[in-house]
Image (cartoon, rainbow, N blue to C red; front, top):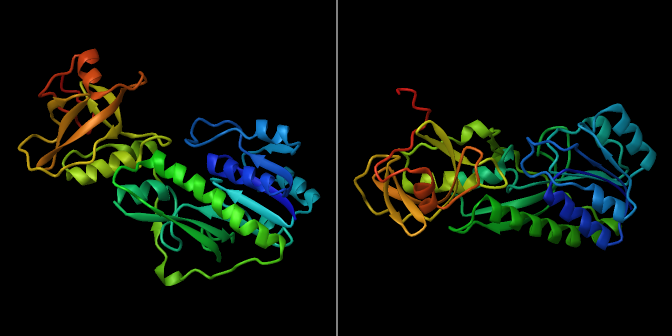
Length: 314
């Protein structure tokens, strides 16, 4: 089957690698130019050149040049993985068999943006990678299949992203041979069960230290790498919180946001009726440090307090 492949992220590259391992006939790859605002972007050029696959950088697969190039490829299948743009009906009608995408949520639940981050922020214990037919409406097409993924207490955005990549590889190996045999699974989504998760922007990561320890922990782990990170302010400086220990929920009397103790490389910070141990932080654009180094290198002390805004009182 002739394939056109569209992606700019690590999940997409893993799926493309699996297709090549299965001797799929990939006629062309479209990817985005380097963009610092895409948190999980990876480059495809090296892989494509090593396998003699033509590649085009484009900001939109809906533009005339991309459409003309796709039509020349005369694809049976169009794969669109991790592409931050709705695909037009013109493009969806190019492949002779179908256009297929992937979405990291258990569709129909979790349509929309940032589904992996939301799964962690909301404290879910399970999510999924959904393989589905693309239609004009976002994430609404018939399902090809789903790979369920457990969310463990120690998981964060980075570890879950690796689980997604593994799931993507599994699904390509499972379903592409079926596609070649003419078996194209279709299971309509249950529209009445659909939910919509909103877009998240970097500035949405501000930490509310008045939340419960579990909520703050989920907030931090849901937005860590490859995403921009949860953050707070102290002494007028923005501090990104990259990692924390799972909370124990012990009741502690401490001001929300206050650095209350040091425990090894971690610092305990007050939240609602408890504390949470922060293990990795980054001040402004400096290198990330442990909680212990945060106190030693920057001169912060027990009793100093994180804020949800820049304190301009001084």
